Amino acid sequence: MSYIRTFFKDIDPKDLGFTYSHEHIVCVPQYWKEKNEDDLLLDDPEKSLLDVMDFKNLGGKTIVDATAIDYGRDVEAVAEISKKTDIQIIGTAGFNKRFLWSAGLTERLRKVIGNYSTYIEWIEDKSINELADFVAKEVEIGLEGTNYKAGQVKFGTWYNSISPLEEKTIRAVARAHKITKAPIHSHTEAGTMALEQIEILESEGIEIGNVSFGHMDRNLDIYYYEEILSKGAYLSFDGIGKIKYAPESARINTILELCKRGYSDKILISGDTARKSYYKHYDYGLGLEYIIKKWIPRFIIEADRLGLNGEELIGKFFKKNPMECFSFKK
Image (cartoon, rainbow, N blue to C red; front, side, top):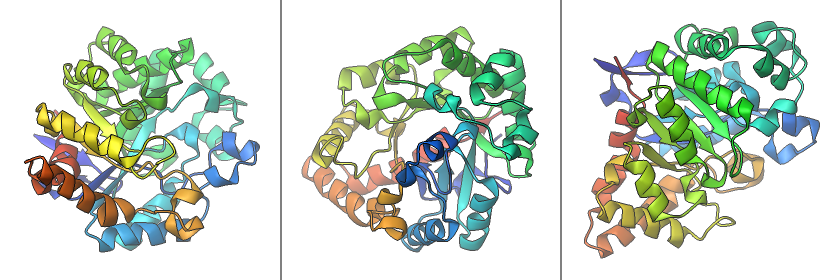
């Protein structure tokens, strides 16, 4: 029997509802804090809550908070937002990418993972299996010593490369998946290295149908997508509204082409809203309401023009596919 794990309880997949598959709600990454990059610090829970309420008021039910331990997550603050809004949160155990690991550990994190100065020291010191056990405990016991459990496990790699420590974390996350059956999420920098990540996962005996690959719309390449999809994976198009990377027409046309080729059951959509300037209530950005208010109506129009059923596709991207992707299959 399958189920989905939220912060507060395991739920029947049919109760997941309308879902954003990759967001960040409250987080203060130590790496960016040390560099005084204020835009990358989502440090006001009340402002984050207002955007989550916008999402709820437009029919949203669940948000996947893709913030791992090395990205400054605030588990308690996100849990409080979940309580106040009645929005279900799927939390994330595991890791992001290597350049973040040079940051110093906060006193709070040292109490959780040990008396290390940086993430690098911790990851270097622990064996793959020790890291896997840590990730698994965040799924089965709670994130950072809380009672709020993760509903997916994550790893990441940098642009066009995989370092030895990143490979170590991939293997640790793969083994944590074997322990917990939690779905796996991959951070790909600018959409690169998914196929190389798959090679490592397969060497650990992972069924790739349990994996979603993030930031795919940063690398609009149908051939590349079909290579990933041939393994059974999910593709996360989570840069909606980020015109600095590609015009919306390029994203929509690529998604529609994948649908025409029969891959509509493997597509996830979200905004990866990880900057103050992306949030409506921090800095007048598009906010969590944008996809529902503006992007979905446009997508339906463009899909219908091609003879596709836009409403049906939206139901897949935001309800059916997340329901399958984020299920623990035991």
